Structure formats: C-alpha cells, structure tokens
Length: 370
Image (cartoon, rainbow, N blue to C red):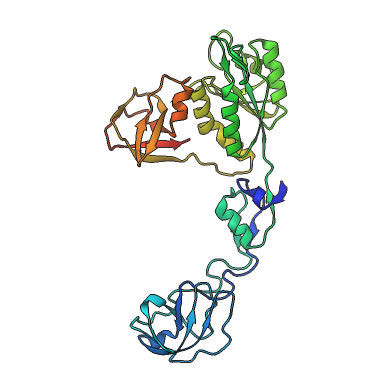
C-alpha cells in the first residue's frame, strides 16, 4: 500500500475504505430554483418575505401564508417542507401564486439523504474513476491510500523478432507484441517492463525468464506452440514450473499457457499479434488487476446487433476484429492473427459463440471493446 495525491489516484485501486466526514447534505437543501413554502398552504397565494441562495442561510421564521424565494443548493428555511419550481409560479410584487398541490418534501434533499457521517463513501478494493475522485474530494481526502501497482515483465521470444527501431529483413518482424502488451498492462493498472527479446536457444530463453521472474508477473509472447523452436514450455518445465493449462478453446489464441514458477505467476501468450491481444484481455488482464488490488475483475462483454449476416465454424469461441458504429457490429476483413493493420482499423472484437454457426442482420452478438 502507498499514499498518493488525489489526482495521482485516478485509475488506482483503493487500499482502505473511505468514510463520510459529515452528513451529506449537512442540512436540507433545495434541488430546484423556486419558492420554499408550507405544503399545507398549497395551492394558494403567498407573501414572499425574503430569499436564500446557495452558500447562505435564511435566519427568519417562515409563517403560514409566507414563502421564501430559494435557489438550487440553498439550505431550506426552518419550518417549510416543500419547494415549488419557479416555472410553476407567477409573481406579482411581494406575492407569489401557484396552482401546485401540497406535497411535503417535494424538491428538498433532506439532511443526510445522500450519506450519513461515518458511513462508507468508498469501499476497499474500488478502482478510482472520475466519480470516485469527486467522492474523495467531497469528504476532504487529499492523500489517498492505494495498492501499489504491480511490476509486469514482458518478454518476447523468437529469432525473427527485432526491435521496433530496426529495419527488418523480409524474414523478420518488429517487436510490436511487447508494446501492445505494455499498453494493455498500463490500462489494467500495472507497470510494464519490456525485456530484451529472448532468442531461440535454451540458454537465452532461460536467462530471460529468470530476469522476468524478478517482477510480480511474467508475460511471455511466442514460443508456446508445438514447433521445434518453441522452447518456452520446455525451459519452464526444467525450472520446475507448474502449468495449470496450456490450451484454451478460443480463436485467436488457442496455445495459451498459465502457470507458476519460483513463486511467480506467468502467462505464455501466443506470438501472433491478435492472439496476444485477445488472450491478454480475456485472461492476463484480470491477473494484473488482481495484483493491483482489484477484488473482482470483470470482462465486460456487451451485446449489439449485426449490421450484416455473419457465419463461422462452431467448436471455438471466436474474438474477431470488428467495428461498432451507429450501434451496429460489422466484421473487419482481415488476413488472420498477424494482420495488425486490420486490428488497428477495428474498435472492438465481436464474440462468436462456440455453439452457434450464424447470425442474421439484426441478430444480437457479443462485443468486447478494445
């Protein structure tokens, strides 16, 4: 746990409950511009004896047949029990008239109606968005207790992978995976640490993994399929790793490894960019969020209607690049899991259920936003 200034707490996870320092509102307040009245006097014609604005108080007594002009947020004068909106009144000199019926409590926010002093304003484990920052400011919290952000090591593997500033040969690719994963780690609340690429030798892979295990979580990219030079699982096994699963029934991203070694958790993500992005969002993101203090991470899969007919082969749940525009989902044409250009054109993934072969135009389908 650490304490950070309130603005630095945005996006972090709260490490202690925050209580209200007083009743909110501390006194009954008007939630409309209008006149404060006795509900028993309505409908009727009332004499206006003063006004009260936000930040002021009305110290006089409001008798029967009297009213006080009041503005939004102003404390309600003692004795009155209703606010009539200005739109429902007519004013003539010192008198106001309304046809509204008497409704005790109308347009009045009672003292303590929002939260009572000592009650929990924010609970432990809450991720702090803009509304939560407002709540902290409301109760006067300037230094916020938050969970420390986890360090996440990111390790790409493969002789074909070069740094992004390099000019790759035709048989090479730039290390885009490490940077996409780093962006996802940042969004999940972690601190990404991009390691040098591990080459396709046992020695290089082992040394890189050992370095990655100094972080709180290790994310590997590539080297987890069944090829001759896919060495990650072999090296991990030699290091005594416990593997919890090594394949998932989704596309892209079937060859996904999750396990533990030397007291640290690791994910072996597939090497193709789409597979890397999808498996991080579905599996690894929750691990980063939990390490950052979040108790129950969510995977928000929404529903939206298809803009066009869509079909796929059943058996796997597919997360395919798509656009959500005007409330409709349209698949993005792509050339497979390595098509970064298509992924960049998409703003979401459509989620095609493993047991359903087709969708007609207008049918609802799952949507995972990027």
